[in-house]
Image (tube, rainbow, N blue to C red):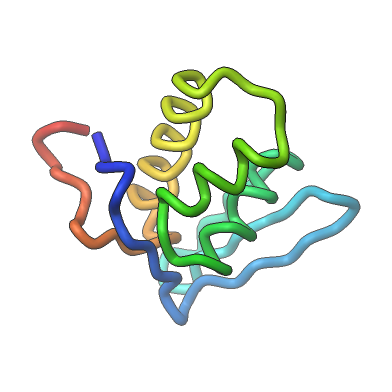
Length: 99
């Protein structure tokens, strides 16, 4: 599992398109698409803006009424999926043995 303190960057070969609050990500290297619902799209915006999981977590806590542990688990699960699809880069990277 990814550390909540990890830094995030977006590879240059990842495209993002938003329509009506939802988004589609495209990894140009693999040709694979990944859809985000409105909450996932908001998380994406925080990741791009802050480059930090911790800052994204805090931003989501400020905007949404949500249990802190639930948000943490959901955020980390989404980030792990995005990293596994090559849509974000994590520093420190996802530990392959723990995913």
